[in-house]
Image 1 (spheres, rainbow, N blue to C red):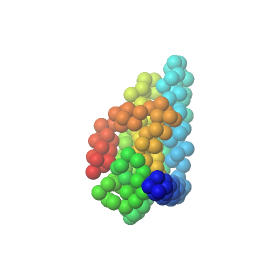
Image 2: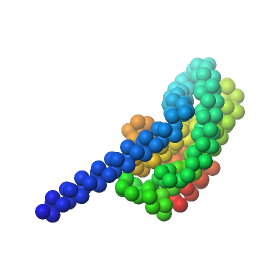
Image 3: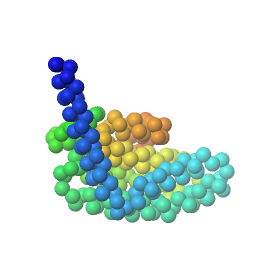
Image 4: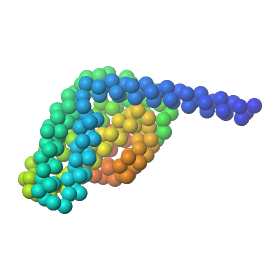
Length: 203
C-alpha cells in the first residue's frame, strides 16, 4: 500500500512538472516568436568558433566580415526583446533557483529570480561583447573578444533552458551540445555580466 502511494504521488508530481514545463516552453516561444534571436545566436556561435579555428588570417577575416550583419541584427532583436519583456508583469516569468523543477516553485517569489532581469543582463552583455569585437581592426586576432561573445550567447541559451525546465537540465544540455560546463560559461562572460548575473540568481 505504501509503495502504491509513493508511485501515485511520484506520478502526480511528474505529470504536474511536465504540464508546467510545456506551459513555460510555450510561453517563451510566444515571447521569442517576433524575433530571430535563436537563429542569430546559432549563426554567431558557429561563425565565431569557425573563425577562431581558421589558421589563414585572410580566411578568418572574411568569416568575421560575414558575421557583421548577423551581429547587427542580433543587437537590434535582443534590445527590442529585452524592452518588450521588461514591460510585462512578473507573473509567469519567475525562474526557480532550485536545481530541479519542483512543481509550484515558480509561484514562490523568494525561491525565484525574474526572467525580465536576466534578459536585461544578457542584452547588455551581448551588446557590449559585439561592440568590443567589432571595434578591433580586421587584421587583429580576436580570440579573447570572440570567446567572450560566445560565452554571452551560451549563457543566454542556458537561462532560456533554465526558465523552461530547470538549472540542472539547462547545464546538462549546455555540456551535451557545446561540450562546455555551466561554470566555464559564467567565467567566460564579461566581468559586468558575471557580476550582475550572479547577483540576480543569488537574490
